[in-house]
Length: 261
Image 1 (cartoon, rainbow, N blue to C red):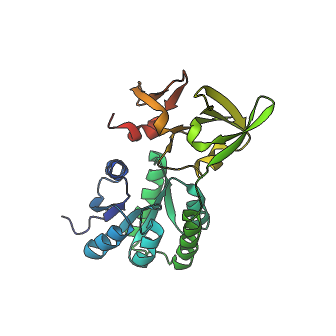
Image 2 (cartoon, one colour):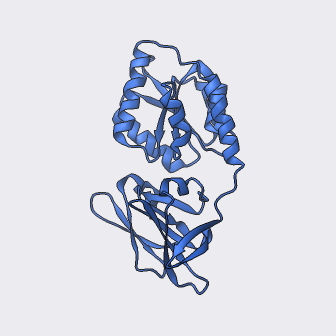
Image 3 (cartoon, rainbow, N blue to C red):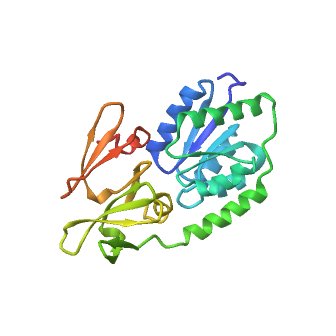
């Protein structure tokens, strides 16, 4: 291997997402050599100590040691890029011009901009930035969120009444202008709809990630409610739900969630 060739590691607990990011980096930065993949923060630190890559792409949310905790151990010995499905943590850091971050699903344009900054820093042989204080703040914030319970109930308007809808009864949520439409089942299993004023982006961070998945910038679906998924043209897809006529769009950015279908 060319000793001058830049190196990196990717840490994410989802193997499909690790592979997807590696493929995108191959297009955006052909000269970059991915020397390792890690499934969690502990593996990321161990791989870093063994291989000393110049760049570390770290998923913020990983079981056990988080990406932020791993970054604190790696410190200034590598250039750090956080990858997160929830940008409220990363925006704070990026707004201060300190940390680079990518929001899942990773957009090619955003990745290209991040790659350009990393290449410039490596060309200039700039040392990695001192981010210890900020990482400590982010780690504390993540710990608070980790200890917060997932959303169990949603209060919503159904006609002239207000209903308390259990999260497990929700089939999907869809953003519609200033409102969020909720597709849910009543006690008899009948498909119903309700409307709330809370933006979808605020709700999605409170839902159980093992049960609900965002499949479009305006759609979140209960994975247990999916009957089947149909591929469409232009690398998109459609979700068909059990016992409902609603068909939900899957955008190209989220199609990787259904690669194995």
